[in-house]
Image (tube, rainbow, N blue to C red; front, side, top):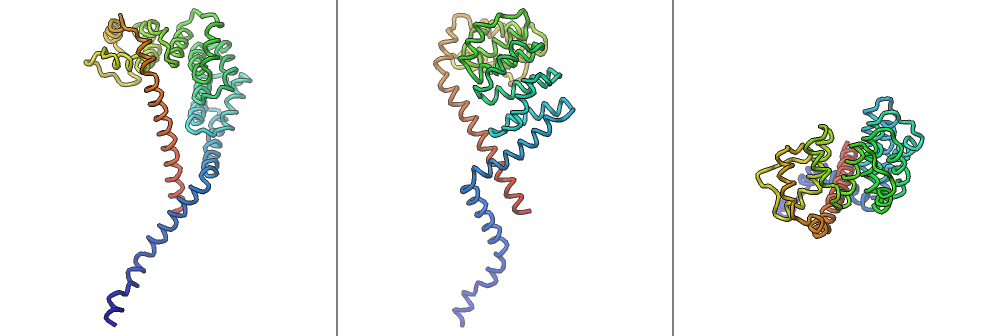
Length: 283
């Protein structure tokens, strides 16, 4: 009897029942994710796709811009991306800022099938800022196609078009547009200064840093406009530096870092989907 009393675990089993059930559900959910991860991701992506479609169909231009941004957050937003493509092909979107968001979203897909449409926007859209974004998108989805296009399309006497070309070359690790970017960062319109500064921050600052020539006294956050003093100092420190050689040397490291960022984004997206599923199960 003493042995039976000392090992009687019924009270402990009773107190652990809720946790046991929760643990079983959690383990079951994880197993379900492991067995049907592709199907679950497809179902969740379908929900995001529908939400983006609703935004893209809104009469509010800002909602349509948000819808375009939503399509860049997941890989399987097929229907909403098709809606963007159809809007650009039919030229039914009248608001330039929305068209710019659509072109940017297609560029983020890095889908070469989108290149002909992007090239058409680049050459025919009446808004210079939309064309600027199309240059960058073209470089992202089809680098070789972009190079052919850059050689064939005459340069326009329009700052945003020139700025778009320079940013696109820098996107590919080619530094032929640095002087133009420095000029716009120093003396362009406010929006042009911001865009040029961002391109320089992403594409030129790492090269100067790798060469030991970045001015340590300056701490600039991504998205901030560079001061005229910083622009002049960077221009001076580029003198005598084979910046293209530096870019070519560190290109593999830059690409590995970009791939790590893409993997982190995918893992974060998967983590969020699992968290939402577990919340739904517990609810």
